[in-house]
Image (cartoon, rainbow, N blue to C red; front, side, top):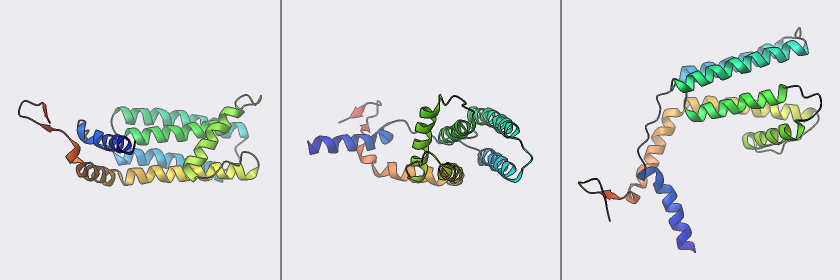
Length: 186
């Protein structure tokens, strides 16, 4: 049983080595950084403005979310941001939307709570408080941490690619050797 488990682990590690060598997309860090900066500016404006009514604040956030998603999709389609950044950015926008969207009948409460609970746990490693003043602060901290994580992802994109390549090269012995005709040699 242990041998089978070891073989499975080695096979999983060898998959990247045996598969085609996917080149990292040539991302434009400035585009990702601009997406993150616009989000930070929105929160700064909202925190500093007391003249917004609740409706104006919700409208401004909704407009921002729609525009940001359009910009992120465009950047993804033009290979200016990588799929990891896009997925995590999209998730962040979704969490903000869930937190801000009105739900007068409380219909979405179980779904929203489930997603927020997972987000807080995955980002902060904490159990979501669920209700009360601490819960909103906890979600705000998770959003801030995820924004920092996305910035770190952008800042370390090349370093991560180099480390991954070095890691994959350590397992090159697991790749089947190819003969002159392109077939695998045992």
